[in-house]
Image (cartoon, rainbow, N blue to C red; front, side, top):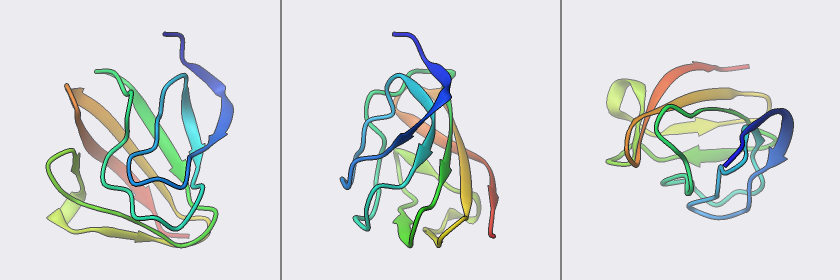
Length: 95
């Protein structure tokens, strides 16, 4: 499908929220995120924390240092799907 980069979408309060049709997201709840649904190879997503939420390091999300990222309000995380169903951290900002 078409990805709209100018639209900021709030993620569902879900352990595996969808990232279809956008690349810019606000966190939508406090449920730890273990994967992102509906991504495509080559897609890069940027997540801005609207509150505290944990991004879990593991098979579908590969984070720098191999550890979970406990995001707090205003932190950012950039991930790219280089291989099918595997997100790799590109960068983060602790704000």
